Image 1 (cartoon, protein in one colour):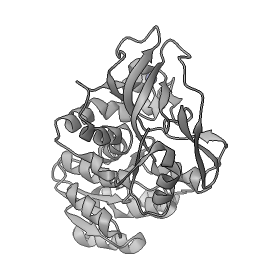
Image 2 (cartoon, protein in one colour; image 1 turned 90 degrees about the vertical axis):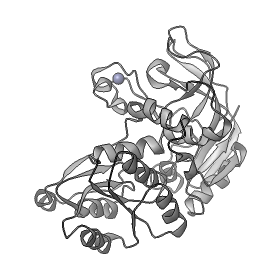
Image 3 (tube, helix red, strand yellow; image 1 turned 30 degrees about the horizontal axis):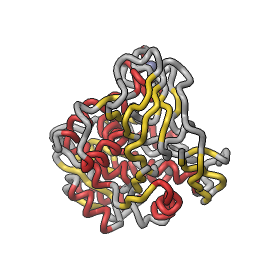
Length: 340
Ligand SMILES: [Zn+2]
């Protein structure tokens, strides 16, 4: 099969990789209908995170079940399935509490690499959710978004305790931030402030339900959020970047007693203790337990209640993955969909 491999920063090759096989009786093999490049793939691509090259890439996936292991009960060949970036048993105590991304048996799908024609998905019964019927082609991007960026934005909103009557601010205008805007509106937020300096992304944020746009960032951005909230700060702030600046912008934009949901993968963030002490905000976040939300998100996409697939503004054949990475790295694209 063909698959994307990162050799060194900036060096993505699509090459022949071994076809995956069932390794454990709880595995399935899927044929990818679509896959994509994640903002978090850019960390090793840019050399900010270590590259253990050559490394297979990709952790977002939707596809059709080809083959199942002997112990698999809930999915069968021919079904269209959606999973997330951590395989989880969905039965342990941590999973049952809703934190499948930290399942005691969690396995990283990123290490398997789904920017490929086929992938082995471990713990299939716990990990995969089948759609009611094979989706029409135009719903595939939305279902693929549910696999990570929508599920992650959704978790950010839930972690930030978004709800009716709340004012929400979203730090970050990548795919996760934009879909956090969508999630916040779906969860009933009254006002959703998208923080973005990029006109095409502001437009998408509006389409997803943003009521206000703040173009300033850092302390100026915080000051704008305060102005919009009678000096108090937002009830709920979703952090979808993962840098020191974005995290401090999120904490400082939140009112005392408010909630920060942080879902940007943290890189070099150190929170000053005394400021945190007096901020008096709730902090909750981490790798999103996307599996918790998948049944609901699949239904919202399949009934066309939401259209998160709009975050994909570049679609390429898998063999052109290198250009997909470049376009996102240079911010020419919000998110690249790859057709295997
Ligand atoms: Zn578990």
